[in-house]
Image 1 (cartoon, rainbow, N blue to C red):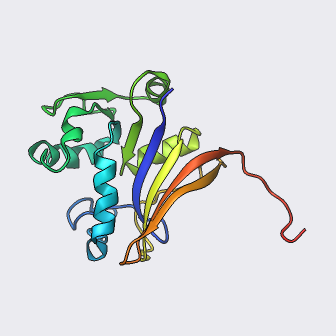
Image 2: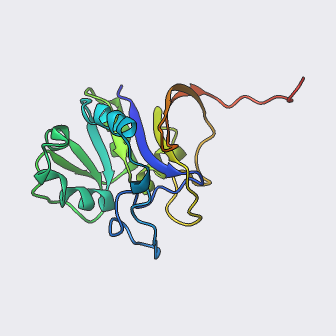
Length: 198
């Protein structure tokens, strides 16, 4: 069985929309696209390059796929694996693309079959709708979060109210000079409760 790993750049209040640029995703009249840009540094780049070098396949929502398909095929020098790795795109409407190694799926059952199949881990970048579906159905094995020291209030968020209760363990962390907290959390089972101080 493969692991499903969610990778996300988020604000302190959990917004993950349009981290890369002003025109990346303006839906909902989002006006803060590119909010990660002021926080870039060598440490953050090192972590990202390590993630990009990992062998993986990718699960994407249609909007994220459209953004990526317009950019990554011509930028293989920075991320060779994204062109070579299989990209599974969840879409009810889109069924065709010129971007090689792309497979279109359209249901939660397709994702479950994919998770049970043989192959490398499956990474989910962006794709808030897919992330919500995975969290609701207890399918996320690992979270790799880049938490930026900014609050935006509105925008697409990593978590919604439908996420299944699940405990995670911090397995790796780094704080960059610009204050970005890079953290890897692995699934740790059911949520435990108690009385503080008892």
